Image (tube, rainbow, N blue to C red; front, top):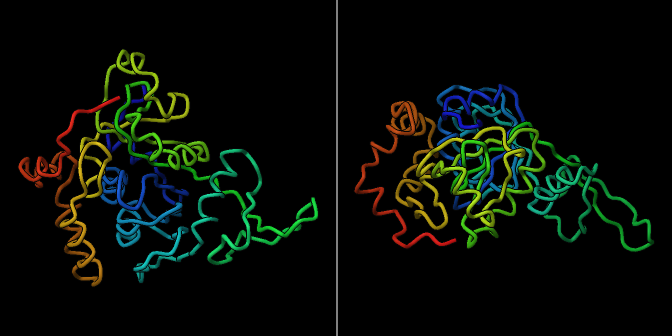
Length: 282
């Protein structure tokens, strides 16, 4: 079985690990696991990704991160000893594609690059056409992803309607040495077998699965719930000052102590107001 608790899954992230996070800038950020990693006081993480978001920001501002290797955000991080390694969006994603395909590097057109950084060099086209830029592959030690459902053996599913939203996560999973997946619900193996078209990651590709209902909050989870915009705005405001950020972390991460207590603090009424009231379709 690959079913683990949040604490057990977060404990798999060792200090100094190269950690990649799935999801998008607005949805399915693996927040429940991010909060647990912060509570466990991980140090020296090399955080990487093809995007930025609240999860990247929280990990960096909490003191868990040594280097941040992701596309530049509109609100760059300052302080906390984090070394930022900005990279353009095109290069940020294709380096994972190269690792997923077990290639030493990926090629991109120069005009697709917003900026050139370490690990990117110009190369001649062997067919005599225009030069390209080679982007060195990036193999995360661990990738953390959030999805709709999984069984105890690690078979992960998303509703068919949202398979397109999972493409980047799939590449990240194939690039990483270890994949941890939090899901909205642990379902029976029979449910997986009965709807094989929903499966996006097979058990052999996953190290462990964690049941974390509403585990992407305060970001959204497609087909399940909307983002908690008010909570995200409050975090953004608090993060601009070190003292306010510390107070926010104390109140919303350390004081909660667990994902269950985090949800209890939000309250059922508020959670229901974010829930998407529509039938779940295959």
